[in-house]
Image (cartoon, rainbow, N blue to C red; front, top):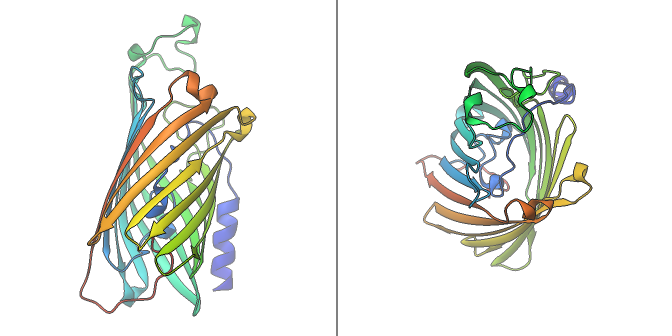
Length: 309
């Protein structure tokens, strides 16, 4: 087991990143397998998750993104199996669609420590039409960073990650787009992304719980930090605030996000509103995110899980 874990950790740290950046989603903790395959099967129920993100609302050709995750856990093989699909429309004839199957193996290290190691693999499709863009410098047309002809590309896409779950703490790390390591910025290659996150849980009373979190994402010369705190009332209503500064921009480009949601009979609905501050506010001051989630119970003996929310 130690050899397997050592190889797994070394594989995660032997990475660098480049090119287009993944979108950081405000309600990602409810279903993380599109960013970390180790989260696959973190619930005994069949878990269905749909999220839509509309960025810079009110701006022409503003970006739109979507995530669809589905997963299940199988106790006889101690494994989670799932499917994730993501769609990213940058709004200017530049679209990416990714579909991957995800697998995670779960190991109880002791009575209060659960390790899951995950791998996802699939295809990335990218569409690029230079005619949909207007350049300030026409000489850029045809350069390696700005192709002059219509491009549609298919690429294999692989993610790798692990999670450590305890009754009051969740730790995770992952590498996405593992096979993409181009040195030059490309319109069709997302580039490797390295994620770290931690989320403790504090029970303030029988009905009220507080879950602060921190997420760090690194990709080439881009570093993003997300500071989040969520309050859960009676495991039914939640609300929270997220602060997302751009470290490389000297904290001059920031975003505040406000989230509110409700869970009823295994069905979740959540809404987030993002307010841009600093340099972001001069472009647009708002983005919207809608979450729909459903868990379908199975008639099997329940297996102990931690931090399912």
